[in-house]
Image (cartoon, rainbow, N blue to C red):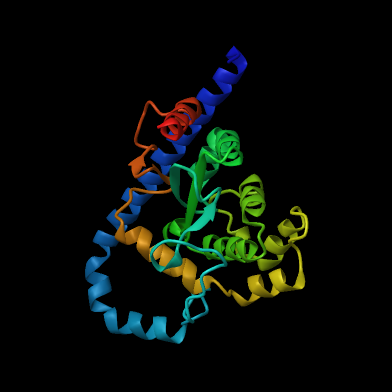
Length: 256
């Protein structure tokens, strides 16, 4: 590996670590605010329930039947699979399209994941969540996840997934909440921008599915996004993990 490539990968790993620390700090601040506001929440519970009932559906949350995207796997059909079924290694990714740390992970690992997937050595199962919507407000995480699920229906999930990260707005910019923007980005994927895709996006066909996936993420007590498990082992928490080591681990598993 050239020194230039080594430096680039090291920089990407450092950026991922920085973004994860920012996310953890944001979560700690949010928890502090929740604790500080606890008495007010209890006293105002009846009012809050009334407001939530009055605004049901206006926030973009899914309240209809759960419609899993085509080909979804796993418990409750919450995983979008990419790669050969016969691959001996499985990468499980919990991600949020508004999450800058997820984009940093993409920058560092995407070429390796594409290479291993194309070779039939790795299958990736994507779980889409809306962590940033909860932390910062808005619906961009939900809308983008629904659009990605619509792309899965069209057989275009991998390409659209990459387009969303390549065009990710700033974390505080909720521009993914605009269905028009998501449909425009679909134009970057050959054959995706169809009337069926547009209707799926605008109707929020998979909103309830995204909400169910988000609840599963919360129930798993994961520390944040991205959470990336290689055959069940959290590689984000492994400080020694690099794209090269990931490739070596997967190839060793395929030789066994």
